[in-house]
Length: 265
Image (cartoon, rainbow, N blue to C red; front, top):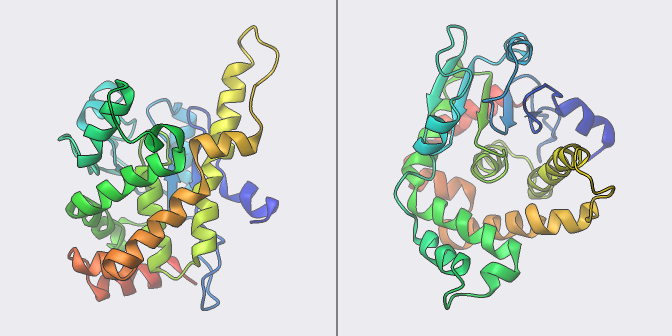
């Protein structure tokens, strides 16, 4: 991914740090993802009025909030009651525990557990994502249904950090419209750069003069590319790929064609 594309994709708006336009990515058949159509982001609860207006001016007409109920109750989305943007709360992971939650609880409480979940961030994240894909397919498809409704575009999808739940939806959409796996993995891992930049800005207000991580170390801990590689492999092995997964969960080929027509030029 070029520095020029990375800079153009990122929307540097006050109150959020990981808002990115997915425009500019090439597809396997020679197309390009349209600009100003599909965006991914972290939480929007701190967006200033000026930043909100900038997103509306950018073209955003639909906001899909993937967070849990408790998250939106504590930090309501600034577009929840908007008169110019259609807001959807689509609770992707659900409020009930996922199968992986029990394993993670044991890790956190230091009970007997799969130690690799603690020692290998890529495995921990990939197991969470697999659990969502395997057990929350209805919620996943509900979000894809919304994005595949052409009248809802341009759309922005977000969760709390813009990495996990947003990363899953983004990977599925990019895969469905023909973006190569290498790009999907790089787009997922790119979140680490904006996480680190955000942490550096917060760290600058502390008394310690330096930040104890390189970008490579930080990425391995917070957003390892191996995680997305594992998810794409999981989808191939268990569902026949991204198309097989969504079709098996109720998405249609017509909707896939709508996505491709809407998002690719």
